[in-house]
Image 1 (spheres, rainbow, N blue to C red):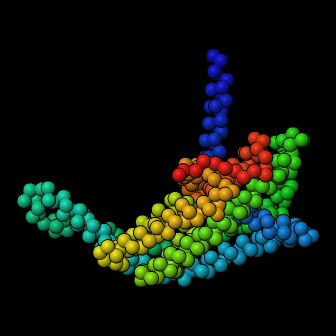
Image 2: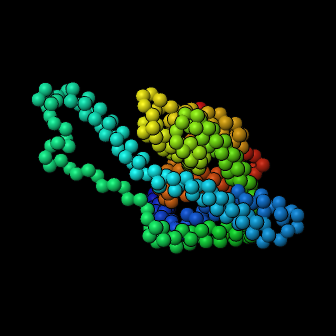
Image 3: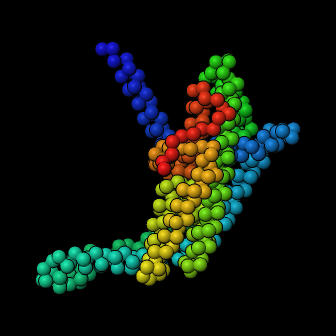
Length: 354
């Protein structure tokens, strides 16, 4: 009987977690851009501090941060536009080449299976000559202008949510931190809580800026390497490598598979494996040596915790969830360490796999 109160508390906690996850999933169109805005706000907070130290009003720093974020977003869209249009134009040919490749691989597998069959089965006519064979798959429908018009209001609303949350967070983040300290801490610990919150945002900003520079170098190296191999659209591949590497583990894995398919479509023999193998080598160098050397001195995260947070973020909010998962994880870990009494001047150090 004495365990009933404990089990009741655990049950209430589990129910609360399930309710929160259900709510976050239901309001994805609001919560996802808001979470992205908070992460961007953490990254841009040093810029706001810079203007405030020069006696500019907080609204000036918030407006400049918002303008910078929207300008970078617009620049990314403008840079991606010609490549996206080219990809849409080349989509039918790419799909046809991929279908031929899949058919070839399927034929090879079928040939291996036929070796174990009887002679009578080995000389059976191809599947397409058998009456009643299933019809070929329908062509892939590409997005139309109507689809874009229908999706425009939802995209615009998410941009407005992102901009509004980012602006007001940069404008009032000091007041937010003071309010959190007043609500959850005793008087003697409020100053330390505010310092912990400020340290958390500084670490997130440092992490995101460092990772952005590393990913940019990886994207540039990928583009140069693929251009040297003669793979069409090498610049686009480099840009995608830059963006997808923000989603640790899963992003590079998906990109390597895409390069493998592209290599099989474009090249013959063992040469087709070079695009994927080259990227895997560069990504391994980046992940095992460059990133730990530049980031690991200040924050070392358990790889299992990183992977689970990425899976959870992608499951909950898709691509945006994958981008914000690690910064939010770092923020929560630093905040937890600070609230548990670990001095805010010490870097967080967590176990890493060898």
